[in-house]
Length: 209
Image 1 (cartoon, rainbow, N blue to C red):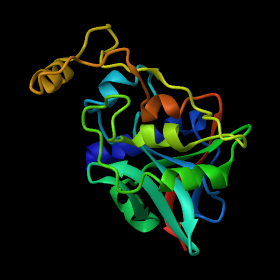
Image 2 (image 1 turned 180 degrees about the vertical axis):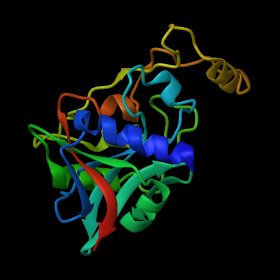
Image 3 (image 1 turned 180 degrees about the horizontal axis):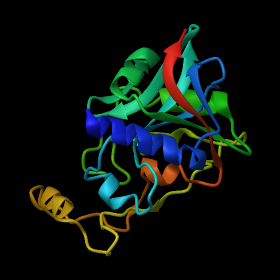
């Protein structure tokens, strides 16, 4: 209970760095808004993607409306799927809403994202295969009005702040007889939330239909 309170306090204290307003409904959200899930505690992903004293993001989903219902397109361990907003927030109580700035074709990007529904989850985070992880879905789908990608890949990082690949990821890839894809083109949700073209507008707390 005390750990939960301390984490909630940390989110509130750091919130000015992320969002201007806390909301509890989806009426202010637009198709294509990004839903960044703040990790409750450090994990293997945040350990190698966050080196600052701000809340770490370890998942991202895509907001859209389907038949008037608030939905989230996301790549999870069950593959690329649609999730009702209510369920998404039950699983992820701390969500920051990001909005793409500049040239962005929201309808075209949503159509593109839907093309990946049913694809398997990319457990090994390798570029160029048929499987997809959460931030990769965003990178593949988001495009400008000419159909060109608007989010360039970055070198993937599996090392900690000291520059050393962590034991978790060394063991993870060793057990699969693979090299750690350190430096290969990719993405991660934490870095995506800090892109200059992404404006963090809200903290989403609950949902008011």
